[in-house]
Amino acid sequence: MTPASLDKLCIHTITTKPWAIETSAAKFAAAGVKGITVWRDTLAGRDIAKTGQLLRDHGLSIVSLCRGGFFPATTDADRTKALDDNRKAIAEAHALGAPLIVLVCGAVPGQPLTESRKQITDGIAALLPECQAAGVKLAIEPLHPMYADSRSAVNTLGQANDMVEQLKSPYVGVAADVYHLWWDPALEAEIARCGRLNALFAYHVCDWRTPTTDLLLDRGLMGEGCIPLKQIRSWVEATGFNGFNEVEVFSTRLWATDQDEYLAKIVQAYKDHV
Amino acid sequence: MTPASLDKLCIHTITTKPWAIETSAAKFAAAGVKGITVWRDTLAGRDIAKTGQLLRDHGLSIVSLCRGGFFPATTDADRTKALDDNRKAIAEAHALGAPLIVLVCGAVPGQPLTESRKQITDGIAALLPECQAAGVKLAIEPLHPMYADSRSAVNTLGQANDMVEQLKSPYVGVAADVYHLWWDPALEAEIARCGRLNALFAYHVCDWRTPTTDLLLDRGLMGEGCIPLKQIRSWVEATGFNGFNEVEVFSTRLWATDQDEYLAKIVQAYKDHV
Image (cartoon, rainbow over all chains, first blue to last red; front, side, top):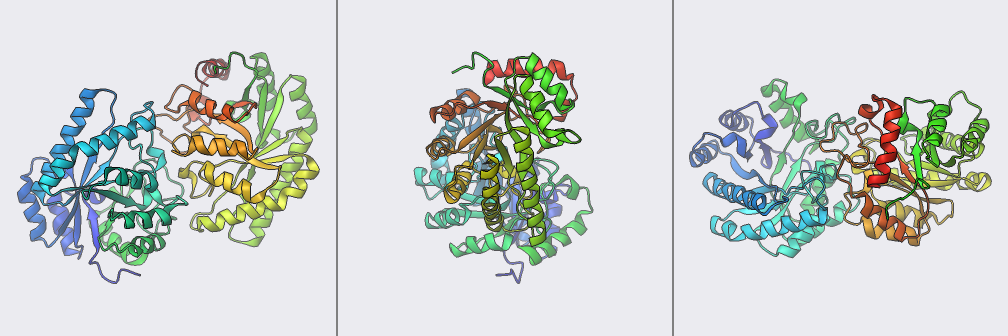
């Protein structure tokens, strides 16, 4: 059960947000980290293909690109704009050499959640030809219900699995993040179902702090909170999942600390708690 | 559909937290409000039976007492202490003349949610003789999943309905609060199920603001957010529910305003949005 090695450790660039992607790549590699998930903002002003080569030259697997999505909108024009941005993300992932894009699906305050979910499904369906052409998959990330107002109308793994079943494409699966899903009484069953659908594309870890002082930027490092990480990973691995355990932590508190020391803590927390 | 009158308007004392209960009672009655839900802290230092009489003398129905619960704990001693406090709440409700106690069921960070749920069910079961003797019912309030760490291991209406079915007592039902439940894709079906169980004991309203800046104390007044209040009330009333619409808003922002003006806004928001 315990990850004896770091072979499956991936870190998101946003976890060490103060660092440029070149710094993250060099530091991650030196620490023995094997995978990196790239947030799109870190690619600004870079040659994306060359950046992908730089990451591979460091021995890092490029696990995914974060993020696409935000499909719902109140006008056709805005929904078209959202699709265009997702097409841009697919092109970026292709250039970078990332096999997967994580989708934060979107929601519009006041628009019925059922309508937003329909727009999300339609949006993903519209992208599938480009995904196939680029060899890039999409992972629906169900977000915690506290983000149902403006970030995602997909709030449980069950809903994400329903969408996967509806879309019926080998290019559409799920990114399961413990922060969003840990509370769900159906979690074990829905992870198993996701596995049966061959749709468990990514697994993200962090922790839930008590008290949590900000809805977005107060995640904990693994071990700082109450999420049963080892139990959830055992459910994930029972499906046959053999991918990376991706550390994705948004934390103004941790970003304010020395990032070299923080990286050492991440590696230790991974060994102790994931 | 629209509440043409204020006949079903109840306000929680915590909504106008700066006021003492005697002030709330006089002001609510003068504004045409017909019901009051009493938070226990407002009874400190009072003769509870006399306070109940004062509320009734103002023409107010005492809808419920907030709150009991917090059953889970890591030691037998602490679970016994929790039961004792709930017995005290039952006695207070009886003295006040409140027919119902709302339960925030509790959770312990790091204790498995399944264990906390078992302790909650056991705790409620242990109280049923006192409930019957006092003529006081208990309402399980499912809390938003963002409170699963430390406030409640019951996070969906489906889970609350499951507990009601398991406990099989006319003294155990549910308090449905839109703030906690609005995002749930199963909400309409679970409200209907709760009705079939004769277990829909209370209905609470407020709104969800975008952005929400605090997990606990940044609720919106009805109309300030994205919750489809009229739709949810239509589901509630389709069960035959004929109780009060209870306004329960925790908001440091609104508590800092003039409470007389705020009460007028509550009444208007109730007419416009509930």
